Structures are given as structure tokens and as C-alpha cells.
Image (tube, rainbow, N blue to C red; front, top):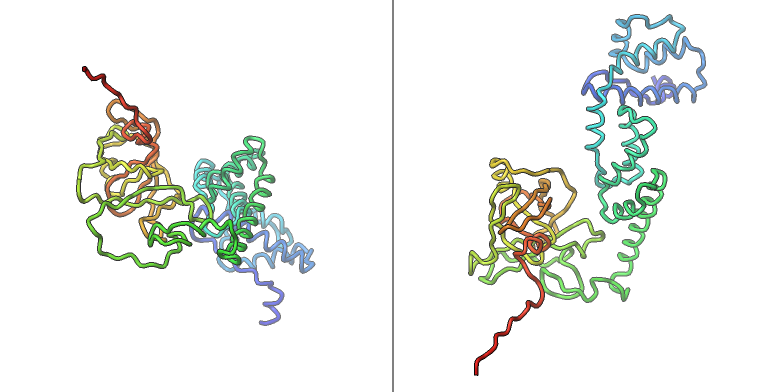
Length: 371
């Protein structure tokens, strides 16, 4: 048995069951592993290759193979492979495969090179032909986790090739790791450390950001207005995150509230002059859908943090919709949908565009005084 295992090379048997759409790509991987195995062992005799292939594939595949018409003679390895390919690779549903391709996104801790490899494997069944690299390039730009990297790639425009994309991504990932390592080693010894003189929004002490603050937040809240804002994450190592500090205004329930039509549906929002995005909770989103809101929804990798927390809120997705307030309209405003409950939050940009928020000195109109 030990001798057989050494000769077998560790190739697992092939499981012909399971998700139908996964059988063909799994079959290609298994066949590749077997071809490498027989080349490495120096096996060239076709009769031996055919027998060894069926043996390594397992008894389930052998049962299927015996039922296949025109599977060739005992010395016809190529015919055996062709018969199995025909069985395990039925007509590919290209629209479905392309749909699944477009849903693919970079996973956590996955490098761009690894993401590209997965996309290339999926593209084999998408019939993209010579345009395959362009579709893979566009998918990486759209679904990579780093906003900073996405900006770099978009700067290159249509001339960006897949090879260049991977080179830029490798350099970006390497510099990101190296910069973080330098920061970890240096602590506050570097005069350029951004947290050296920064005030923590959680404990209000200097020298660190709220995302790494170890101060516990008391559950008791005084009767003061809690300032809420959503801003780009200066405290994170990249600009992918945002902060949403949910407002509870206990002294005047109507202050800062405004009625807005979102996708044709009326909704009450709280204006937040510090917010960089609009936020609604899941229950509000469900109500808007029940009232047939006109919008475009999709998934998002955006992260949002509540006040005093280093743990992101659970983001359900995002949508874009036209918004109207007092005759003023904004096209395709973006809203982030979070799990849980809370007052809908209108961000600074949209509030200014709707003319419900004005920042800076306002003009003063002086009237003449009759003597």
C-alpha cells in the first residue's frame, strides 16, 4: 500500500456529483493534475495512461465511463478523455457564467494576483475570446477592496493592460505592507506620525486615533447633543472606510430634520454637516422598497463605524436614487444601508446640493435707518 501511494502521487479521486456548474471546472483541474502526474512519472504508453487515469479518477467515474458510447479501445487514451469531456462539459450557459463572473470580488486577505487567477479560471467558461483580459481588468478595478488602488488604476484609463494592472497592484501591496511595518516599528518616534498630535474622538486624549483607542465607552449618556458625522477614514491605513456617528438629539427632536423624496418616496432625514455619505437603516430601506422606490441597488465594500467603536457596522448594501427637496433635485444620490435601527442620516454633500445646508459666512443685508 505504501508503494502504491508513492506512485499514485496524491491525486484525489474525482467527484462527479455536486453543483452541476462546478463539475466542468473541477474536471479541468483534475485532468491537468493527472497530465502533470503521468509526465512526471515518464508514462507514455497510452494503454497504461488510460487504465491509470480511470483508476485515479475513482469508481464513480468508472461507472459513468462504462455507460458512455464510443469511449474507444483499451489502448485509446485520447478517445477516453474525449468521451469524459463530452459527458462532464455539457453546453455552457454563457449568460449565466458571465453573470457569475461579474459577481466575483476580491476576498479578504486575497492579493490582486490571486484574484486575477480566479477570474481567469472563471473566464474560461465565459466565451470572452480575445477580450478576456479587458473583462478581467475591468472586474479587478470594480471589485478590488482598496479604494486607493482603484484610483491608481483608473488614472491609467483605457490604455491600462492586465499585465500593467498586476504590476501596479504588486507595487501598491508591497508599499502598503512596508509602510505599515515602518509605522509599527517606529511608533511615535517619527515626527510625521499622523496620530502624534491627533485628538482621539473617543477619549479626547492626544497621541492616538479612535480606531485603536482602548478606553471603554460608558453606557450612561448625559443630556448633551452628541455630534454625529460621517467622514473619510483618516485613521485607517487606507481610505476605504468611513465613520457614521449616529445622532441622538434629545433636547429638540425636530432640529435638523428635513423631509426628502428619495426615488419618489417621502422620507424624513436628519441633516449632518460632517457626514460624507447618506445612511439609512435596513428597516427604512424595506419600507422604501414596499413603497416602490425608484433606485439602483448593489453590494458594497464600504465600511462604516459608529461613535467610539473600532468594529464596523454591518453594511447591507447601497443604492442610488434621485432625491428632491423643496423643488431642488439631485440626480443619483448614493445611500448606504446598514443593519439595525437608527434615524436616516443626510450627508453634507447631498444636503448642500439640496440647499438645506449652508456652510460658511452668510451675506448680511443692512437696511437704512431713517434719522
